[in-house]
Length: 581
Image (cartoon, rainbow, N blue to C red; front, side, top):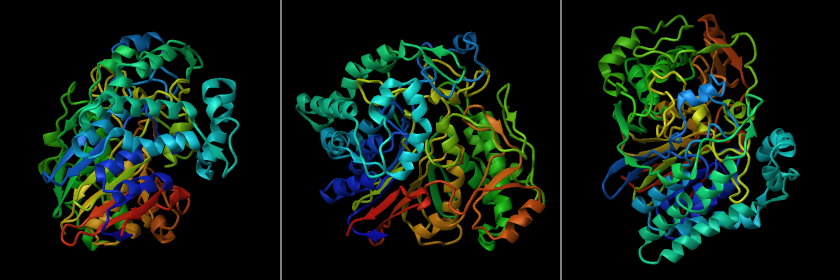
């Protein structure tokens, strides 16, 4: 859908409406994104929360430049490999309190609003506060996930049960009074600061990181909670960790691909894997292939395996580890790696070109068996159903934002009662191999799967896009992007709706780190003859259903005529797109 008054898409229709209202009342893309992000804390608590993180990419029209906001909190000062191993862990747990990183979401949204927005923080938080206080109608997607985790709330997490139990019927009102009070406290801090808009944003942000919010988290995490180890552990995160935290606006990574320029976050996330795969694919004549053909899908799967192998061997927080990005993103390295692609045979090997996988990885699953059960949040993420959400926005001035909120999920950690939200468990993605770039260390960001995308296409349009889905995020979005950039699909909705595949060949970023060599999940709308040909080449296919992969969202701005467009995946019937007239 398109219009000339701005466009948005978000993981829930009410969040998209809130973003559209910001644009309609004169706000810009950053204002709209911040308002949607706060609303998603209320509407999708199984996907994200203030205790989590949000990497953001933004194109600032005034400067005609792209920027990245890291939005990923670091490990606490007490989070050392020695301490975690002394507790009996070989892998950080996927639930409980021990794996909590510093909450980064509020800081990231505040940085986006302060540097790129026009509104006061109280203005963009007001709709979310109203949702938390007045409530929103329970919807099937959330109801199913709450049913899954309700027994743990009832038996172990009374602070979560107080908000979410009994599970509401579809259409019944869901409120979150403590979250409403916390949002109100931020609005009060903004207004009390007086002076400039920027001063109010900083005052509200500091009220959480150095005030009552940080103290509430500190108190709550001192009481041990049972985790996947079946033992109770307290958290390592303290109020001092929050007080010392400051996110950053960074230069994004970028590569050119067939006339387009594509922007991603740094190697503290998995974003560069998208760029590495583009480098590999530019050596093949994709434009001469049907994107739904066996030849095209085989090339895509094999290059994904190579790019993700380098992710697992080389990526980490560049402030702590030397990540050879110049080599990994170079055409020469891609040409060398491209020779490993056998056009007739699927690889069953994990083949990083540089570095090495962490000691103890990967744990191999029986490729002919179903994946082993994991904690509810990660299991649902593997299905593209939770663990993360997405919002995108474009405005009439050409500002463009892509944000991927995640973490602080209610399935994996109990709610802090004074705040109405839990801490996150993102440290589960760090490894306990001290020589690896993604090794756990105090103050270091764990390498996350969160991966917003931004591109300027060959025709001049600016495109923001992203999806939930853990390790599948850059897999589903790359297929969407290739249909637009390589195959000339002008209709964003058609590119999103096209059936997709993804590889589970690489070690999962989630506990318990399973790798499933050669396994590829396919949507069954793909021609059965194509699937049989892929199996003949050695791919171990799992037929996941016709509409099973992710929730890609996209928004575009065309400087030639000013058209703004947005599109949202119909998968799971939750996300929504709006273009204003």
